Image (cartoon, rainbow, N blue to C red):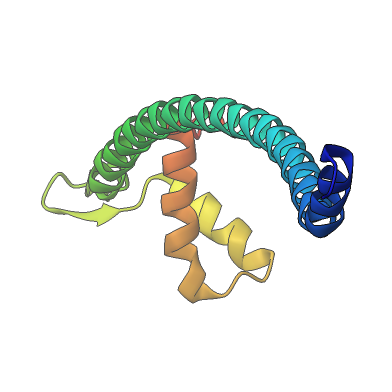
Amino acid sequence: MKTKTEKMASLKKRFSDDINELKSKVYETKRDSKDLKRMKVANESLAKNRLEKLRNLKSLLSELKLELDNESAMQAEVEEELSDLQGNSHQVVEKVWKQNDNKKGGHSVWEEWVVQMILEMLSDRTPPTCILANILTAILREKLGDIPPPPN
């Protein structure tokens, strides 16, 4: 009969391959577990950084929206003012009624500064089709305060 040690040796021999295979699977599982823990930490850190960046971008977006709203309001005011100025510009340059010397009748004449401006532009070789636009620009610039008003 076989002794206990012989039986153990035969069992050990018989199951040694299975035991070695199970040990290697345990080691692989431990290694995979460590790798997964490292990946989890790295992913959590990445997620935290991205969340913080997202919050920063959201706050920046809200600031930019406010700035855009302010700019839009300012642009609307400027456009309204420009529209008012352009609407009134044709009223500024008008002919003046000049009475004849004999006090009977009269005729319309341009103000002297308008005539001087037209002559100056023609002497500078400005095309006649551009003169009206240049006069309106000068009047708008005068209203905006860019240039001094013409002499009266």
